[in-house]
Amino acid sequence: MTVHELRQELTARLARAGIASPEAEAAWLLTHLLGVSRAKLGLVGGESVDEADARTLEGWLARRERREPLQHILGLAPFYGLTLRVTPAVLIPRPETEQLVEIALEQLSILATPRVLDVGTGCGAIALALKHELPDALVMATDLSHAALEVAAANASALGYAVTLVQADLLAHPEVEAFAREADLVTANLPYLPEGDRDSLSPEVQADPPLAIFAGQDGLQHFKRLLPQAHALLKPGAWLLAELDPRNAETALASATNWADRQLRPDLLDRPRFLLLQR
Image (cartoon, rainbow, N blue to C red; front, side, top):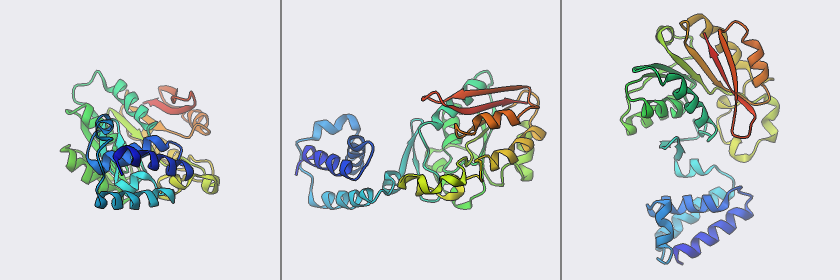
């Protein structure tokens, strides 16, 4: 079977399995299998796929048809131009979180050597994207999960980026508190789904660790704990940026009454998602 024929078959099977973007995922599987870029995939369409590669691809496809996330199958996820290792121990980074990186870069643009703290870093996506864009930044990233920090450490090592990783519950750690007092900006993509969503989520989202997605009855359990910690530690002028569920973003904004500046930014679908608070 040629690459072109295999691509057509993959697309059809993924569509029948209910995958939202079957053409894109078929291309992703083939580029990963063949070690070629998406741009070059069409150039090798007439070439045959050997039996060993076909067996590997069939194994991946069978797992995807069972709605296992593609990122878990391949062990990789793209984020802000980086390719990051992911495992079932971490939240798969979402495209919308790239906007949080862009907002952070906007706030840090006038600083030569900013100090940035990423809380609940997971695989390290936000921290490493900021370090990639701001090589001179001093970056610390925290997570409650030791397994998640191992993934973040592997990603930092693979990219060659110096990021300090600390296992901590939000800001409640001496080293984290000391860094926060001098930080220019804190990012937080914390769990934000309410518990009531558990049974309605897609199989792919349900594959994420529950610790990384659920936050009590209103989805704000962790944000409500972070808010006073950050206000007590951050210096005047420093920013706290949080990604939230659009359903609870207005409530989060209303709870932050004692900050010098408060803004709510929309995502690409014009839903309120990103909260900006300046100390």
